[in-house]
Length: 324
Image (cartoon, rainbow, N blue to C red; front, side, top):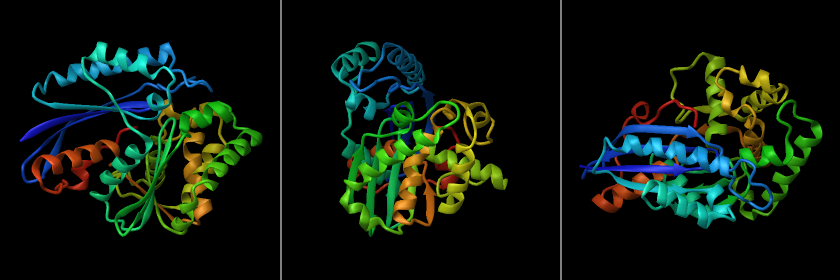
């Protein structure tokens, strides 16, 4: 038996999962932590991590380190995604991270991030053909899955925080702002030639903004006991929920059951990539996943260390309904 702690430093939140795994490939989660830190907030066109955002992030990470004292023999894997990847002051941040936390931080490429999403999903959901969309704070990862294999992967430099800051008002969203955001996304998608091969495939959605759709839908249907992982929603119903959110001001969005108050100011921008892709691909179904980057790293580690494919626990045990 071995213990591994995986820290995922994202653009909007920082998350940690502590798991134990065994020689037969089985595993179980021991602890989960997460904090909304908005590391990518106000990075601007020069992509500079701001002092206030860095301070929030370091405070959260130090609390994670306290949790890790309960697992003194744990292997610790810390990775960073889009905000640190894009930062012009990346070197200074990495130095600060190592000095404050006494560990190294691996900055993933966009393609690595997308690949780990794929590994996390393909081992926990039975969807042989689909398009994976992971919408984070400052990037969106796309993976075309054909016959359970990753046929194409790409990372695009747009996410919930970056879209919201660049185009959308914090309160009532204007038609002009929404149009500019949609146009920017369409231009990015136009450059991904292989998206045509994903036409009419289901979209597997992960990331906190996307999973919010499932949480709102569960509340509306009084299906709160259903797990998010594997939850299905028609593209038509997803569009209805999005339209309802879009029509509300900030304070009204904060009152929507299933929508975390801390996410209300970026939810419109965060859902826009999914809505635009659903329309573009004429996709009829969205399938939600709570398994992604951290699970992908865990599963890769299990296979490398034990020589066995991962043996997943039951879905109810594997997932937890938190705002990510």
